[in-house]
Image (tube, rainbow, N blue to C red; front, side, top):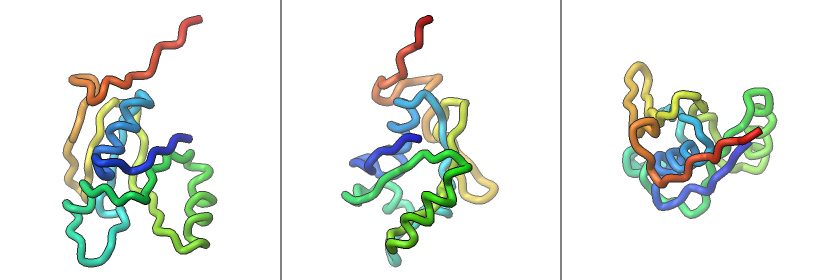
Length: 117
């Protein structure tokens, strides 16, 4: 499990930072991102809401984690998945676009340290 508060980079930028520091990639399903009524999706994805979090949760724990937020009336959703390919991808239905490929270029240079035996 991993978590990060949504920072100045918005949901997409924060996902990029979390993925890079964890040594993974991610796919964000933008259609699943909860947002306030009347706010355009492209603006919301880049907004610093000052109260949001991204959580990386094992599939077996997802329903329980979602339920904890829902019972308290807090907006929560499964908005994507973690991947092993070191890219952050934004998807909307059948269309998908790579936003960042850590194999090509670091974002903040926060690459996990190798484990030595």
